[in-house]
Image 1 (spheres, rainbow, N blue to C red):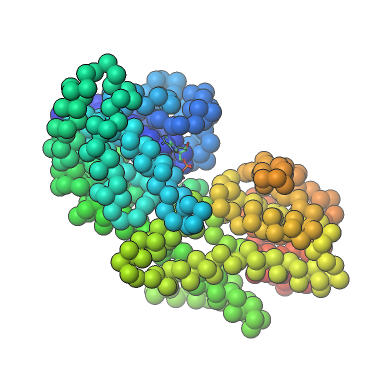
Image 2 (cartoon, rainbow, N blue to C red):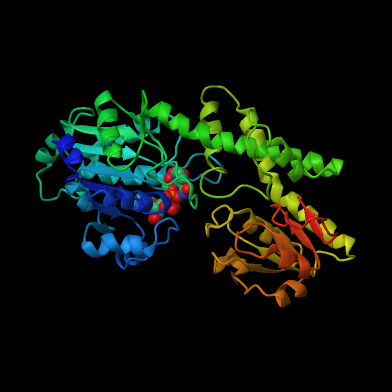
Length: 454
Ligand SMILES: NC(=O)c1ccc[n+]([C@@H]2O[C@H](COP(=O)([O-])OP(=O)(O)OC[C@H]3O[C@@H](n4cnc5c(N)ncnc54)[C@H](O)[C@@H]3O)[C@@H](O)[C@H]2O)c1
C-alpha cells in the first residue's frame, strides 16, 4: 500500500525538474530517508548533479554529494524510471508566453510523460506555481487520456493490454493527484523548506490525505485545503500580495522624489508602528521567477470571468516602469556633473534580482544594462555571485574585481543588488557619483552630494 510505503519512508520518491524548487525538495526528502530519483530534461545539469555539483544556493555541494555518493539520490534524463516511482512531484517552470499569458508547456510535457507510465498506487503532486484549475482541468485530463501516449514506451506491451491498464485507472482510488505550491524563498536563511508550512489541495479527500502524509514526513506543518483550486489561488494571492505592496511602495517612492522627501526614512518611521503596517521597500524593479510573473497568471485567469484585475495590473505597470525611472535618475545625476550618459562609464553593483543570491532571472539589472548600452554608456559590473552575464547579440560581460581604483575610474556607480559583503562606506568614499536604488549607503550619516537615492 502506498500509505504504508510513505509512512515507513520506503516509498521511491521522484522529482521532475531539478531547479531551485525541485533540487531543494529532492534533498529535503532524501534527508528523512526516502530514496529519491530526480528527472530533468537538461543533460548538462544532470551530469553536473551526478558529480555532486549544485546550481542552487540553498543546496551546497557537500549536502548534495552525501546523497549522490550513497546512491540515495539518483538523477537522470530517462523518464522510464517513472515506472518505479511511488510519488512524483512536478517542479518545472511556469513562465509567460511572449504575449504575457501563462505558458504551461513544461507542465504539459512533464505530465504527458507521467501519463505514459502512470500506474496503480502512484501519487502525483504539482508544485509549479500556476492558475486555479490547472491541476483539475489540465493535468488530470492528460493523466486520464494516458492511453494516447502508449506507443512512446510500451512497445513491448500489446496495444490492448496497454489500453486496458490505462483505462481502468481512477483518480482517488487507483492513483492520487494533488496541488501543493512551493513557497521557498531562495537565500532566506530564516525559513527553510522544512519550516515553511505546506498547503495541500487534492482532487479527492484521499488525494489530500495521502499528499499531506507524504509532506508530514519532512515538513513541520502541513495545511490541508479543500481542493487544488483553492491551493493554486492561495499561492497566487501570496505572490500578488507582494507585487501589489511593492508597486505601492514604488509609487510612494516616486511621489516622495517629487516632494523631495526621503522615502527610506519614512518607511523606517512607519515600521515603528507595531500593528497594521508591514514594511516593503522600493527598488529598481521586480525580478526572479515568481513575483514579476505570477500576478499575470491571476489577471489572465480573471479575464475568463469577465473581470479585469485593475489593481494587480496597475502594480505590475508601476513595478515594470522602475528600470526606466532608475535610468532617468542616472541621466540626471550625470547631468549634474555636466556629463552625458552617452560615453559615460557606469559600474553596476549587483546584477542579481536581489541581495545575497546569484539569480539573474528577470533581474532589473539586465533591463537597465540593455537600455544604458542603447544610450551609449560603457557598462562594467561587479557581482561576486554572478561571474558573467550574456546579453544576446551584445555579448558576454564578466564581473570585474571590485577595487578602489575601479570605483574611482568610472563616472557613476549604480547599486542594483545590495549584497551584504560589499563595503558601501568605501564605495561612497571613492565613487564620483552613486545612484543607490536600495538604500545600501544608509550608514553614511549626512548624505554627501555624490549619492543619489531612489
Ligand atoms: N525559484 C523560486 O524561488 C520558486 C519559489 C516558489 C515557487 N516556484 C515555482 O516553482 C516552479 C519551478 O521553479 P524553479 O525556480 O525551480 O525553476 P528552474 O528553472 O530553476 O528549474 C526548473 C527545472 O525544470 C527542468 N525542466 C523543464 N521542463 C522539464 C520537463 N518536461 N521534464 C523535466 N525537467 C524539466 C529544467 O531543465 C530546470 O532544471 C515554477 O513554477 C516557479 O514559479 C519557484
